[in-house]
Every structure is written in structure tokens, then in C-alpha cells.
Image (cartoon, rainbow, N blue to C red; front, side, top):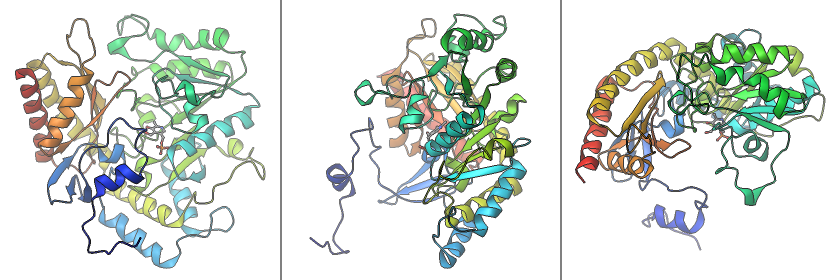
Length: 437
Ligand code: PLP
């Protein structure tokens, strides 16, 4: 039945009836209708400081003017023709720009629509190039929701048994998670055993037929877990000894989020394959898998394709977005504001015993909540309540981590200092309320 446009439309109830949401624990109870910079507005005109960026996507701000203009211009010219059937200028320009900003030697890109697809491409390329089939990933990692990417995701609760079996030939290495070291050691006395153990993982958890190791420079969905500074260098030595490629998953850490254009730049290691999505086009759907010529060129006709991947509107938007990020020096802005936020959050930690750890780089920050700082028992119910209280006070934060006890602070990188203050004051008040109740 046709619905007249003037009829009031009950988004929440229509969602409940017609959108599959049973796959998520909760949809935040607000109907977001607009966004600008670091602020989103709901249908009632209420404004919220957005500290989650649509899961770390709108790094250059909601509805960034340059991005909107570039997308509109391209919409009037050509919306779709398929980048793998015809040559498209926005695709060429974006691929060239990615070659300029990516780690040394990564010059050729395959475009897709999402992060998971970018990772699928990386996994296929690694197998094809090395002629090996096993993959090593990290426990607590997250790489997407397709069967391939779930197979390399180190979280049993996301890889539900009832949807399996998943890909075989995947080994998982211990998470470089100093706050909850899986080896029971303390940094720096541990001498990064979590990295050195990679040799044992290859020898005793695989059949030494490993194509690639895949990792996020900072584990986002896992709970903003920051590996120690020399972790990837130590791991890379072992990978090189066994001719194993390093696929870096920059889906969440890319495009200035962590204070560098790419998260792996903090670790002085060059990956062989880099997968990107989320912030690449400031909210338009696009994924990219960038690698060296010799790896890229192992793909043969029929090996890979995407109908929408490299959509010209998304590519034009991405180009404008990357140019904005560079011109406005959003990476150093993220570092500066992130350092300020960490200082303030460390002050909150002194006040609230429930804050076990504050961590992160740039504006990819996590606050891990515990019931008791000595036992480190996760305070997951309290974390969800703080997220809800913040939203009621018009600040949006993320809630995640493998134990459900991490508040995620990942605002647009254009966030203003007084908006950061508002967000942190609100988090502070929410802790006060929880402690009183
Ligand atoms: N890799 C990482 C590190 C992610 O955080 C995500 C999504 O959260 C993905 C891959 C999957 O990206 P997408 O949801 O665009 O498929």
C-alpha cells in the first residue's frame, strides 16, 4: 500500500518490523537525521557530540563540504559504469593518490565496497602469490563478517558455531594485550614474548605452509588494544624467515585516525598488502586493497571482480576526502587532541576506580572498565550503562571489546577541543551517577 509522504513515519517501529536487527545486541534508540562536523542531530532536532563517527568512519567530519561537493559533481557526470569493465578517471586518480600515500612499494589497488571485501582480496592475493594456503591471525582480532574474514577473526562469539564450519588452515597467535597479557607477563620485562612466540605458532600450529599473517595495527573491535612499540618489528623478522606475507588491516586505523595516515606507520614496518575501507571516503561505501606490483599481478582474468567496487562517486569523494585530510593535517590534529583527551581521561582514572586502563593513539581511544582494579573483573554491564547515560546527556560513545567492557572514543578528527571537554565531562558525570547508584 502506498504511503503518503506527509504521513508521520514511525522509523523505530518500521525498523523493528522490516529491518533485520536481531544480529546486533542493540540499536541505539535515536533516529539520526543529519550530521555536520562532530555533531549529529536526531529527528527531534536534538544535537549530540558524536564520539563514535559511525564506527570510526567520518574522520573528516560529517557531511564534509569538500567531499559532498566532489560527490555531487560526480553524481551529475556518471554514477556507475563498472571500474572493471571500463576505464574511469576517478578510479585512476584515487589509485594514484593511494600509491602516493601508502607505505613504500604499495602501488597497485583493487577497489571493493567494504572492509571485509578488501580483506577477502588481500587473502586471495596472498595465497595466489605465495602458492601457500594457511593464514595466521591474532586472537581477539576482527576482520569482517564474510565467511573468509570471520574465519580469520579471533573471536568465537562472532564466529557462531551454528553458522560454521569456517575456513580451515587458520592459526591464531596470542594478542599483544599488555593489560591482560595472555602469557601472564609484564611489559617491558616480557621482552615481547607475544611477538617471539610467532616462531612457535608457525612451527607447531601450522604445517609451515603459511601465506600470510594478518593483523590490525591497533585492535579496534577487540577493545582498542595497542600492541607494544616493537611488536610488529619482532613479528616481521619471523615472517621474513618463513617467507610469510604481512597483510595489514587498516580498515579502522587508516586515514589519520591514530595520528598517522596509517596505523602501521607507528611501528616502522612495511606491510606487503594493506586493506582499507571505513574512513577512505568519509562515509560513502568503498574498500581498497593495495599491494606491490609483483603481488597484484599474480591475479589472472577471472580471479577477482566487483560490480560496484571502485564506484566513481565513491572514488571522487575519497579523493576529495584524502586531500582534505592531508591539507588540514588531520593526522597531527588527531595526535594533539588525542594527547589532550588521554591526559583528561587519566585524571578521570584517578577519580573512578572502575577505570582499569585508558589507552589508544591519536583519536582511537579506549577506556577499559573493571569491577575491581586488582582482579580486573570486566565491568561490562556498567560499560553499557555509561554508554547509555552519555547518550541521554547528548554524547555518543562506542561500547565494545571482546569482554564488552571498553568505551570507545573515536570522534571525527575535526572535533573541537570544547566538544572533547563536553564529552569527557559527560563521561565523568556518568561515572559519578553509576557510582552513586
Ligand atoms: N577490519 C576491521 C579492523 C574492522 O574494524 C572492520 C569493521 O568494523 C572490518 C574489517 C570490516 O569492515 P566492513 O564492515 O566495512 O566490512
